[in-house]
Image (cartoon, rainbow, N blue to C red; front, side, top):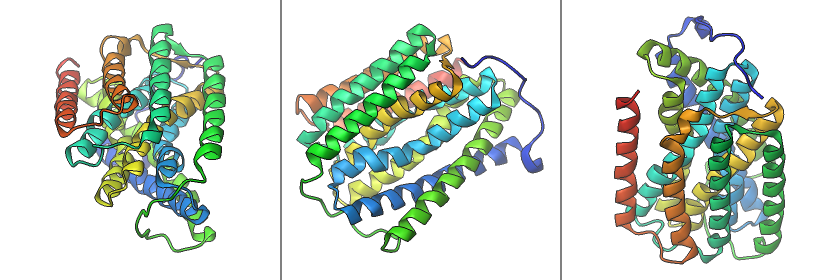
Length: 329
């Protein structure tokens, strides 16, 4: 379990201000996430994997690396404020992925007819959302839940790779990564390094900014950190939408939300001996997550599609939600 240890320090990294650290961290996370995604997609293309499988697995994992970096850095710091910011970043990122990123995809018409094969993934999304709500109720994401989450994700990935890898692959357009496994692996590793440094700067700047503004780390995590770590998903979704590849556009978001819970929080709880979850998430945030993810998951399961009007409602709701967080801070 993560408990309060040393207080957050006041020293700035390299003498940089909190605002500069926050912006620099966000930029490194976005660039690093893009490198990881491009390397993953290139490898997947070389292996002949279909787009929806790429979106739900490799791209989703790649775009969840910023969240994992923030959580692992929070565990390394060992103080409750960092953990609140990191967990808030995961919950807020899942909310932003659905109510902002997927909503934008709906508005531009890239999610109107989600692939029928994503119904199984929608059930997994609902399961991951249930785990988050359960952890908030328990007040922690215990080690046993982390082990079960990671194991379940590995089993499910093995299942979908075996059952779907032989299906047709959609054209995902040109990648700026040169052909070949070497360039793809270099892109992936370099991206991981940038994500590591970006998450460190983001935590330092985010905590300092929260202190100076008198805003809690929980609110900063749910908003600024969540938005920053959702930028890779937004970039991938818009790119896939413009290319007309709905499998990546929708699968990336579903898969990323699943990976954020089952992999990011799962791995974090295993390494940290359990993650303490602040009860502040139980008043509003977890219910916003359950409501938005439930709406999308049920729409996919029953094959009703996701309309522009639904996207507008979700996006307006997200703006109202963020406004309320800051007004009540």
